[in-house]
Length: 378
Picture 1 (cartoon, rainbow, N blue to C red):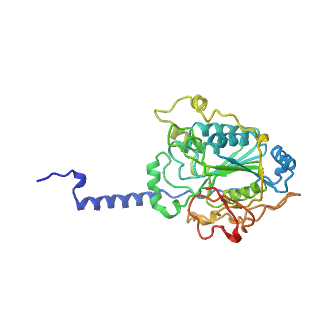
Picture 2 (picture 1 turned 180 degrees about the vertical axis):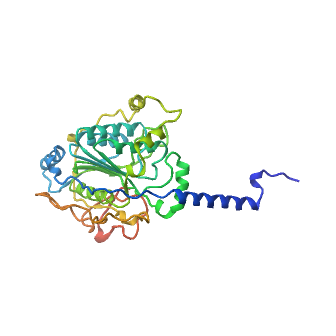
Picture 3 (picture 1 turned 90 degrees about the vertical axis):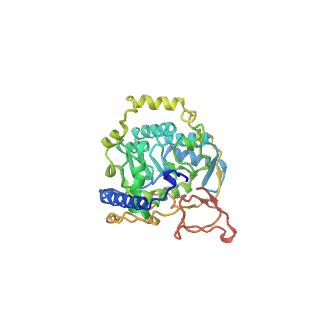
């Protein structure tokens, strides 16, 4: 006679009980886990006259000094230090607008330093727009949404989930009630200053993406672009920002609710002092900003390719606000500003900036067409 652990014994009733529990959980989540109605919101767009900003004038002078006929400059950001310091430099150099679009922003030391600079930019009058996918908007990372309640900063959550934000486990369970929609995420990663210089690539924002952890860091590559390609990146940002799936944070959670999530027995009473200590002791967060004037740009043809938000289904109860399109939201060029290059044909050697999720049939791509070459950055 042998005695097996309970985990290895077969109890037919147990599987039925588990199935019943899962069904009950899904029914409960679907009953209380619906999204709130979309509040009134206004469309906004990238800066129309970027060449009039100090950053725009600097890039224009750098282009003229190079003697090139190309209108886009590129610089590879191969290391974590360059990736962090370049973003910090963009925040500190922006005078008109900052547009940030990410799949994940982690609440840790390197992000605290960047977002501290973002708040300071808003305080000096820079218009800040932050678009964040909502999949990681729970637990400690939910505190990132407090940015939405800072004057001068507008923050929206893309394709939000309906579950509780205090528990990542319960939030994950809530996706079962609307699995198809909630599994379609926005992986775009953009960091744009004054519609003049932008960074895109594989990095989200967090210690693990800037080699600031003792282990388990991600190795990624970013590219920093200046000039015409940035207008195309901004056009993609605007499409997602003004889309029906982009919910204002205030429609999903209040500032008081976020503060209550923060208050646990392990929290430090002096949050500001704790953040400053984390920044000062971080090998990444204490880095100085990059000297943007000293960058050696590689001037070349460019074309930005990006999936449209329309491939992600909106919540069934939502529809675009009256009079607002969701596929063609780029504003008309103003003044003598040249119109942005088209985003559909593939000519020359385009820069390819696709989201990381699987591309649908509507994704615009033409690798190998007439022997052309694509540079891909996920």
